[in-house]
Length: 335
Image (cartoon, rainbow, N blue to C red):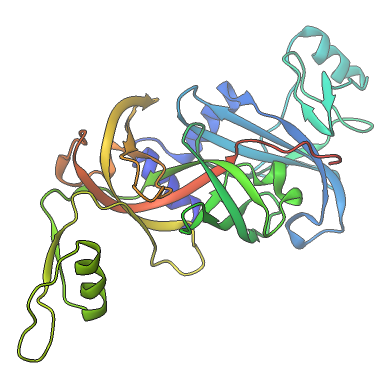
């Protein structure tokens, strides 16, 4: 789904996206920024621009927005959020047109100064808001072999599809695609910090499923070293299975969004925190026996069914927006 649905998962209508953006502009902390040469939004010739990101608040789940300079723009548009120098000397320098140097440059990734906003080129460029989304700064660490890299049209966002260490197919939105995208290679393994934000979540305690497929039953009874009597037609008797300890990630039902998945797990631990006025549950799943890559789940209070309050030992299931970012960045030789 689009980011409108993702914001509803977190904000639930209590806070508008416009108010969220104003909060980011007022309180957001700068993240690493970088230069990239790209054909921005597929409508302009390729050019080098600077990408900025800000996040707020200092909680495991946060707001994040990404802005990109536009060297061809002469006037800001309605989506522009200006970046202004902070403090007396940076403001004076901007006023007289003096170009300030970045605080530090490391392998082509510019780290924004604590005291000034970078003024690039011959003077400040117009800055446009490209995207904003809920961002999980903490999650579960998992190694993933990349099978597909699916960039979005704005050259800032993208989805990764891969294979976890147990052979499970997993897809997730890369929250730092703008920082690392060009250096991913299909077939290579990377270590990611993964998380899931719940679209909806419900308690599934006591649920069972009946297995009737004969091939599946044969494997089930063989695994349990059981040999039940067959009926007159030679068929194995059906088996009733508890799903209390089931851990599973399954593809969602929204075409074109592989990062939307269905999840099922048992809860190992639960903690809570607030993202401004929103109560959020942080749910840590019981590790699967087969190293299933079920990540930490964040569920805002309003997405829980019938006032449910998650607790350790419960079995839960629901729709999940999978996301993650590169946890162990490689030493990129050039950016």
